Image 1 (cartoon, rainbow, N blue to C red):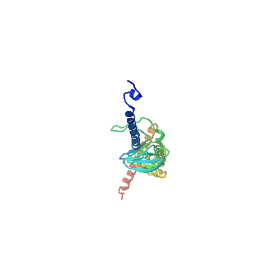
Image 2: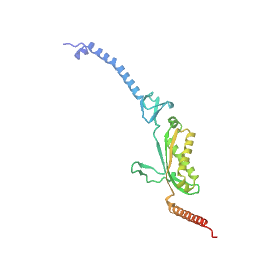
Image 3: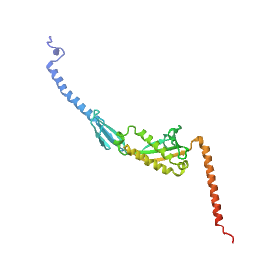
Image 4: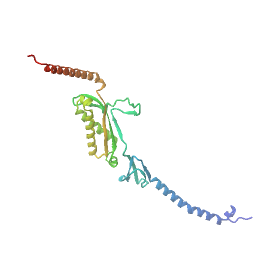
Length: 251
């Protein structure tokens, strides 16, 4: 038996094999093309959470803002999405740090005197701890006008608090003007943030603990006790003068 061609040697004719290869090639390119289209589409899909908005940049430039839901952006790095939480209340702590919040909140044992030691208007030193709560009211300004948002808020908050504490006496900062200090700091802080178009809204500023440093607490307490004793004596003396003045004069 003689074999005239390689196809016949392998057990079949060439005419039956080559058309099958041609049919397979006919489906390869459409399949690859369809796969690339799917990759293109799915790489452009992105979702925005219920408390967020999506800020879309095209080649780094802002083009649009999208609401919560599923959206499409031009893929391949042409458009990029940044999700910004506009309903979330952020909090910054000054003079202390919370390690684990909860029923039994745990705080850091470190001292943060670099940000908490402040000088009052009557040249006394206080350790001031406070919080600042804020939210993002303009996500575009927040992303594009401020390079380091958190550090900016912290630096401005500390500067404003130092200024306001310096406008008050030690007794006012400790007792009588705590609420007023909160309000003044919040108002001044908001004005500065608006001036620089940060897109940040201050929700609240609240003093936590305000105390003299541990090193001077005994002396500070002794001075306060002396003042309180002086006030009590003055009150008793004024009461005695009042009683005498009300006594009927002898005829």
